[in-house]
Length: 502
Ligand SMILES: C[S@@+](CC[C@H](N)C(=O)[O-])C[C@H]1O[C@@H](n2cnc3c(N)ncnc32)[C@H](O)[C@@H]1O
Image 1 (cartoon, rainbow, N blue to C red):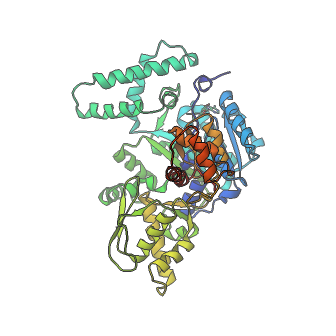
Image 2: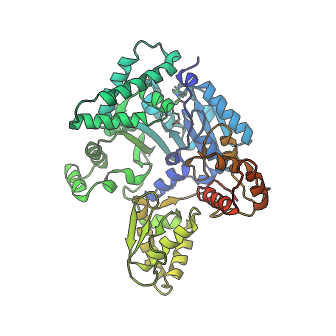
Image 3: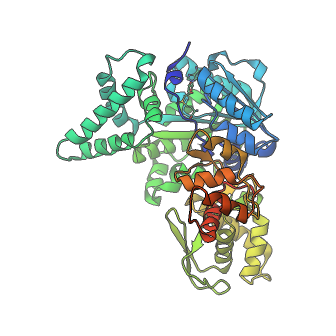
C-alpha cells in the first residue's frame, strides 16, 4: 500500500547528532564503553531514503548499516544511490517496523530520528521494544521526539491547519494539502492583530514554519500522527521497556549547561537527587519543543557527570580563528579567538592560546588530543611544565569549548585535507548526490548546499585526474574569464567545507 511518504517524498538529510561517532563520544564522556565507531553495527528505523545512513556507510567502510522504512519509493531511491556507490556495508529494506524480527540480529547503535512522535501508539511501543531487544549490551540508542510544554503552541497551529484542509482526501491529497496549508499560514501571518505577547509567539512560530522545506513541513506538522510528550513521560515509557535515559545527543543541550547557575540551583532544590525531574523543570523553563535523547540498557552503569579526563581519548576539531593578526602566545596576555558562526573566547593562558591557534590553522582537519597537547606546549614554550597538569588543564578547557559549541569532540572523523592537492579529488558520494540535488553531504556528515553553478561544475571535474592547468581550461569553457586565483580560492573553499578527499 503506498503511503503519504510515497506520494510526497521526504527529502533525506544527514543528521550529525545521530552519527555513531556522536553517540559514542557522548557515551564515552559519561564513562560508558560503547563499540568502536569504525567497526560497529548500526540500525536506523524509519530511515526514509537513507540520506542519513548512506553517508555513514560511505565514510565507515568497516561498519555495517541496516535501514528499514515503510515507504517503498523512499527505499528504492536509497537502493539507487547504494548501487551507484557500490556500497557493500549497507542493507535497506521496505518494512513496517511492527514486523521487525530476530533475523536482523543485534546492533551497537540504533537510531530513530523523526519517527517516535509520528507513528501510532503501537508502532511507538515497537520502537522501544526493538531498542531493548536488538541493542547490544553496551549499545546506545537515539530517539528524537516532540515535547511539551513548548509543543502546545504548535498543537494550536496544527488544529488550525487540520481545520483548513479537512475537505482534502487522505494521502492522495498530500500535495494539495501542502499548498493550502501554506496559504493559511501566510494568511495568519498577515491577519494577525496588534502584537500582544501571545501573538508575538504565534507569529514567530508561523514564520519558522513558512521558512521550512515544504515537504519536511508537511510531514512533520500535518502527519496523521503527531504526538508530543513531556520528557518524564518519555523516560517512564523507556523504563517500562528496560531502557534508561543517558543524556541528550549533544550532552550540553541538557539542563545545567545552558541555564544560569541560579536557575540550576533552584531546580536542584526542587529535586536534589533526581536528574530526570530536574531535566523536566529545565524543559518548563526553556519551553522545550524537541528532544534528541540517548538511552541504554537499564543495567548499564555510568557517571551522570561528564568526565573531562575522557577528552584525552578524543580527536578535536575547531574553526576558531585569532582576532589579532599576530597573536602573542608564550606570555600571559589576553588574546581573543572568534568562531566564524558566532561566539568568541578570550584567554591569557599560553597553553590555551597555543591550542586554539593550532586548531584554527589546521581546520577542518582533526587532531588527536596528545598531538594537540604536545604541539601547544611547543608553541607556548612551556615544555618544562608538568605534563600531567597541562594535560588536565587542556582537557578541561576543551570540554568547556565543546559545551559552548566552539569545538567538536570526536572518536572517529574521516581524514579531511586542509587544502586541495595538486589533482583535487571530491568524494564520490558528493558527485553522486549532485546529480539529483544541490544539497550534498560532506565528510563530517553535515549537509552542505552548493547553490552556485560554478562550484557545482567545478565539483564534477574534481575526479583526481586534473591538475590546475586542466581545471582552468575546462572551467573557462562555460565560465570565460575565470582566473587562476579565483579557481584556487574556490578549491580552498571546497576543501574547508570538507568536500574533498585529496
Ligand atoms: C518524518 S519521516 C523521517 C525520515 C528520516 N528518519 C528523517 O528524519 O529524515 C518518518 C519516516 O518514518 C517512516 N515510517 C512511518 N511509519 C513507519 C512504520 N510503521 N514502519 C517503518 N517506517 C515507518 C516513514 O515512511 C518516513 O520515512
